[in-house]
Structures are given as C-alpha cells and as structure tokens.
Length: 292
Image (cartoon, rainbow, N blue to C red; front, side, top):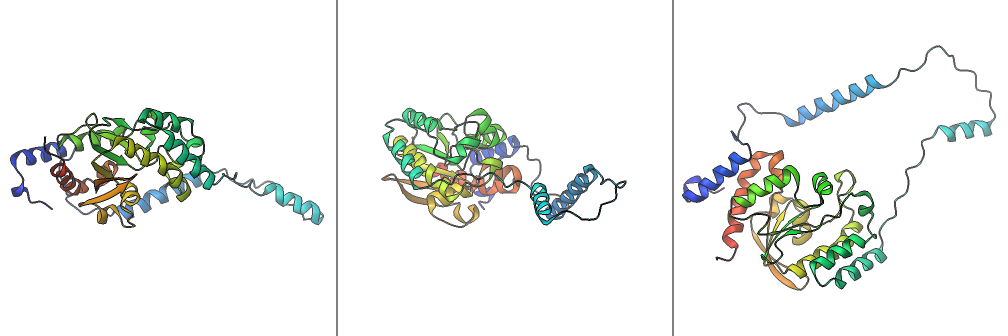
C-alpha cells in the first residue's frame, strides 16, 4: 500500500474525493462483523418463510390401499415425476467458425456491431435483452474491459451502466479520465442468465468479437477490471488479487500492448476496503500512460 505521505497533494486530494464520492465515511467498523454468520441467518430466515408459505397437506382424506396394476402404477409415477428440463444446444466448432468469419469480415467498429447484432450462434444472445457493444472514444489508445454485461447494461444496452458505471466514472475521474475519453467494453457482449459465468464454449464463440474490437481500435493500454477479463487476457488461473497491480505485455490480434488488471467496480461496492488496492492500480495505470 502506498503511504499517504508519499502522495502528492493532488493525488491525495483525488483519493479523498474518490472515497467521498463513493459514500465512504469510515474504512473500518468499530466491531468485527461475521458476514458468513449473517448470510447463514438470512438463508435460514428465507427457508422458514418458504415453509410458512407452503400449503399444509390435506388431512381429511385417508389413503386407499394400493390395488392398481403394475402398469397403472408406473403410469401414475410417470405423471407425478417432474418434467425434464429443456435441453439447450451446446455451441460447437461450427459456431466458433461462424463467429470468426463474421468478426474478420468487419472493417470498422460499426460493421463489427452490425455483425454482432446479426449473429445468432451463441446461446447467450437468446436469453439477453441487448447486445452490449463498446462505447466511448475508439481512438484514445485506452481500452477499459469488463467481464460481461450486468442487468443494468443489458437494460440500457451500454457497458458499465447503473451503479457500477457510476463507480467506474469516479474511478476514471480520479486519474483524469472519463468514459468519453476511453473505450469501454466487455469480453462477452451478452448477459448470461442469472449472471452465471459463461461456459468455455460460449467464451470461445465470443473471443473473435472482442479480439476484433481490439484489432480495430488498436489500443496501446488495457485496463482489465475483474477476475474474468484478467484471466482471459493474461492466461492466468489466479484471482484478481494475485493478477492485479502490475503491467503485463500482451499480444492480441497481432498487436502488442500493455495491460493492467484491477478490481471491478462491483468489487469496490461489495467490499469498500478494496478501494485502497484499486487506488494503487489506478495510480500505476495513470503513470504508465503516455504524457501529453
């Protein structure tokens, strides 16, 4: 952690503004809080509510002796069994090849967005409301990449919408950037159902599109926010806490660029103490950008 006395007045002021804008009034609670115990209590309370809402079984009718034939018993058991879940088509090599062909045919970011809107080879698209494409300044040389659209992104059709987007705005502002001066995007353009992680096949289908975005925008610096983008581009299997905080040279679509992984805005909203780590990363990112 960078000591406060090592920060310049401007850096210290930006840090304090970042904390204040994020609603932080103190960094530590007066007493330790057992979040695991809280979660267990909430889970037990929800289970009790569900049991209370369930209708009580009828008691006036006595069961009759079983006198049906084996065939009728089997038929009755089948009718009582829950229906099997509908099968979902698993993306295959043909879908990956189609994604590569569609992405490579795009000569501009506008054409790539049109290709994504028309592409139907990924299961994720069928359950999403929007295809969330890049926004911002494609000629800035700076690309900020998140994992996949949130519910707010899916609703608005823009990356980093809602409260997560507001947090990102404050993060960028603290180092003199904004969503208008960088290019914002996600690795995956469609929100997975229930915010689940994309499957390996779904990731491979989306890979040509994000790599083509990078090839067309030609950024020199990437800011990777969260576990998923860090693992995707840095080929690591650790957590964001082990992958963050240092520049890595990466090669994507034949281009070499500098990439820095850091925490996602949601990580800071969930655990405000993570803001100290994010601030270190943001300072490192700013110092690594070309001086104008």
